[in-house]
Image (tube, rainbow, N blue to C red; front, side, top):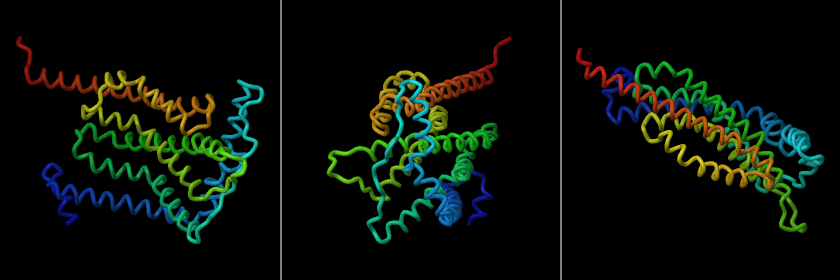
Length: 285
């Protein structure tokens, strides 16, 4: 069945054939994630002690950097002097379940370039021949943006969220003993959300290619987008201006880059349409 589908021309494939093709792309992607998840599972000490639990320590890179940078604007600065909370496991199987899910998430992150490659192979038959030549560029750019987002989520959003939520208290009577699952959930959501958020320029490129987004549309709602960004930054960061600015700047830059990309796609499509028009209706001599 698989060989039969591959021998067909992509344009002659039926809907069921496309579903079969998609199924194999998903199977290969899932296999890559599973293999890398098993490897991540074996490196438990590195994954947890060196990476996931690092933001709970005062000598974490972000805390030291934020302290040094903030001292430029204020003598006291914003220095993290205490993280008054402890992590605990309340369920018999909780730690094992967390270990498995963390390994799967790690497998997804590490396998992202391959997942993008499988995605590209699935959509490439619907592209022009000259557009298929950009496969390597697409994979490199998408992977770079995703990993930059992951690092941004880990080194910026996560420590700011951990510091704020770890120090927040409605009363001194309440002890801050958090479940390990809730802590891991904050890191996982911050990292994956940031990774996908940094894919905005790539998403805008395809939306512009399909005619669903125009440069004028992005410019028109620029102010609205900035307001949304500031609100999101205020939610995920401590209540201070410096932290909100740190989180907001990359997102605003990505939005501006998306506008430039939409302009490029729009102008290119106009040139191609003009070239087709001139070819169809040659000028009279």
